[in-house]
Image 1: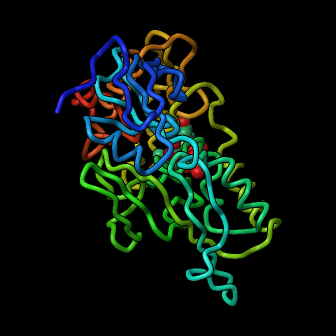
Image 2 (image 1 turned 180 degrees about the vertical axis):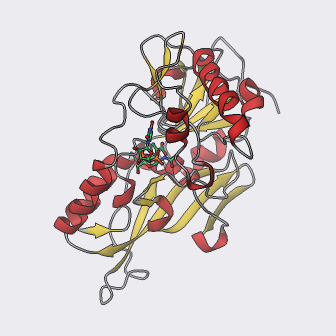
Image 3 (image 1 turned 45 degrees about the horizontal axis):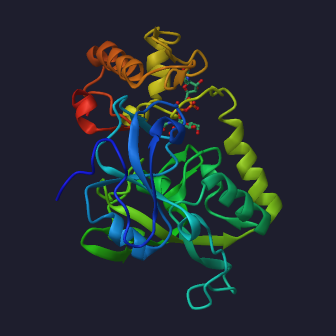
Length: 310
Ligand code: EPU
């Protein structure tokens, strides 16, 4: 297999998939990252073509730091039908008597916030604890994104996974999932999922969303990938960083948020190097008081840019 050319014209798709060379910074919430060839993939067939060469899958970019030099692989962005949700209850899998709803297919590229608004309006419960997560469905499932009020695996029935070896469907019971971890290997693409929801009322779902939302009130509103580190042993990493006096530390244009120690924010014009510098600073300072190294919640592209942080 050959890597896509690092510059110049994008390689064309046989199936007419839109391919463009673009700065990745615009696809990440922290707003850093160099260029790559992006494949805007709309169907399973197009996805099968896209994974014929070395690739990376780009979700909502909300938990991702991309190196300033970009990545040489093609970057897949699920679009069109693979970024839409069919919420029609599946008659074979749903059970109106008990209020169980299993939806049609929800594309991995579907933005999570809009999906949650629709579920709230329908009064369908199970995923409202994930409110406030800015990502897409695929990435959120891959990392089992969540808050203290709930996580993605609270509402999943089937997960469809695409790799160069083909397409397969699994259920949560097939996976050894846990806190911020789906057990799905890196690089496996979550193309679509079916949601497993419980009939409730719009009011009850809204109330629980508001509760979960209230817990985020103190979080920074600036460009950020969200929490940098997983909570070690259930203790808030933000609290530990705060206690170590690291809030407000700055490298270049990246800063540890004064509002919450586990957030790094881009003050405007930050580079990946600035962000990685802060991650190393925090890990180094907290090392003496922890039994193991703090584990990153972010993905870093390419992995070699921060091998020491894994
Ligand atoms: N705290 C401090 N200083 C700080 C940060 C926190 O004193 O700088 C204290 C808070 O006052 C609170 C406690 O630590 O008493 C816990 O803080 P918080 O409620 O913010 O929870 P967290 O464990 O730091 C987790 C998730 C967040 C999620 C919140 C709210 C992780 C790594 N973080 O944070 O998720 O929004 O709960 O549900 O699990 C994310 O995953 O990207 C993320 C932001």
